Image (cartoon, rainbow over all chains, first blue to last red; front, side, top):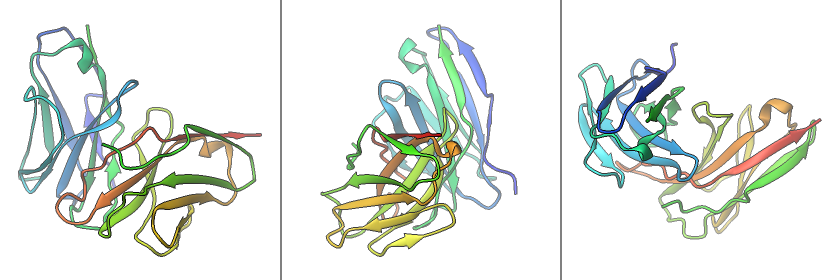
Length: 113
Length: 112
């Protein structure tokens, strides 16, 4: 079956702009989690959506938001971009119940100039 | 915050077993130990997980100490393609299950 897909794969924005990233989970998966990866901070959890509801949230400012649609596809939005938002953004999908592994997508590389 | 401690790097000769340690001394009774790896900026890949019993699958074995305060991931016959950053994660059961805290991981260098 198809894996987790993320679009776009690469993105260049300037400070102050906003950006929307998309994640399509594996068919049948209801949970989508988002992570930010930077060289300095490593992989950090942003938030998780399950059945269109945000179920868990990490320690990121309100500029980072997300949503999930009825088909489990998810988007994350970053408003008022800062240079420090340059990162690899990864999403992961799972069935969302205990003991299930998460499957990660290839990520979206965001560069803020 | 990550609740695990791993050595920053390890070397292993191709064809030999790679043993990657992880310390999780504050693990709770309902927390599982998960291992993922990431190959050069690709998305992390699931390897194995366990609660308290040793586990084995086609990729690796997971040995968890009796007190559950540490574990070891074993790649029985490392190949060059196993060169990656390996993350040990503790994940609580329940609705917070997918809230993974990744530490710094161990960079495994498999050498010919």
